[in-house]
Image (cartoon, rainbow, N blue to C red; front, side, top):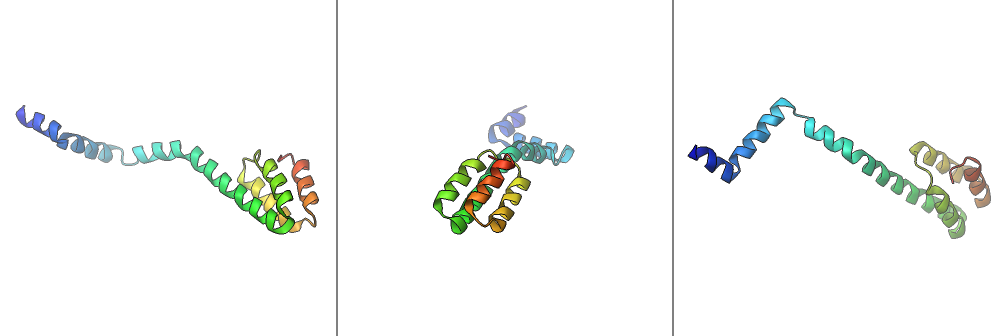
Length: 108
């Protein structure tokens, strides 16, 4: 009884329980963490993509178009849509054409 109390006080008992849990379900904690972190990671990734598209638009069409595109990009929540917009930045001859394509595609 005394040794159990000492183990609990030192945290040794808790470490042993953790090791047992890992043996029984080695990926349980990782799966739960990954599942919980997925929406946050996706949100962060889309933010990075938006910033990159804004930067490309600014370089090609100037600050005003980049600002207007940035407003439209706020409603885009799929990476595939972002990739399509990146192609349009390259393909469009003018910034207004780019913005028009985004509006017509209902991205923004």
